[in-house]
Length: 267
Image (tube, rainbow, N blue to C red):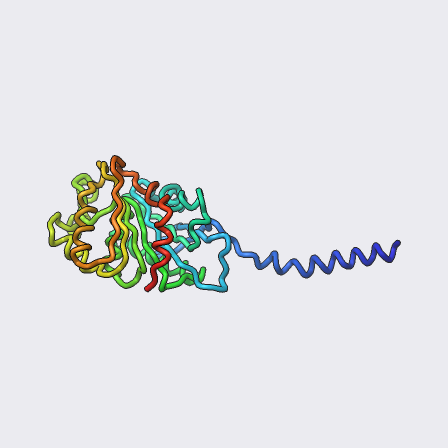
């Protein structure tokens, strides 16, 4: 009996030794806290990793830009709205890395410092988590919709697809009053502005979403951009939700086809 007991103990100890490396090597997934330093400023941001993430392969990677109400420096508020919320509801629909930077209070995504933050977070996460440069995507809502379009215009060959939600290229008057420093770089509301943006976006696949009753960012801007992109021969999808106000992002990110469409694109 004593011999069998010793055998059992030896077997148990050996099994612990064999399984310990497996536990130790298991990767952390879900929403991860990260920090980034740029020009002496430390920013907090988050990265989402799907449950089956592994460093042994390249992964599609999405840059998500939040709206104006989520600005700050806590590194958390930007995960409470839009794409991160959709991920929490049904994460199996999002088999991709998602990078979630946070724009500082009283700033705007199209400012060079915030644009640099977003792109730097994307670059660092791509290196750290085996992101695929050929399957890199861009989406955002409201202020982030504006930011998505601004970045896509500057870097037309960086993203395999973009999905701006309730954004635009022409700032509404109340935004101009809140951010007078943006006036010098703002597009005037004329056909040439939309034609120029459409030409710069080129053939990059784009899916525009907007609520038909949006009283914060007028839907006319998305309609005009859609028409300009079609006229320029762009690869454009347009979805307008009748009767929906500014929050069109809940419907947009709940669309069953949106992630399938996005992740099917590659540079």
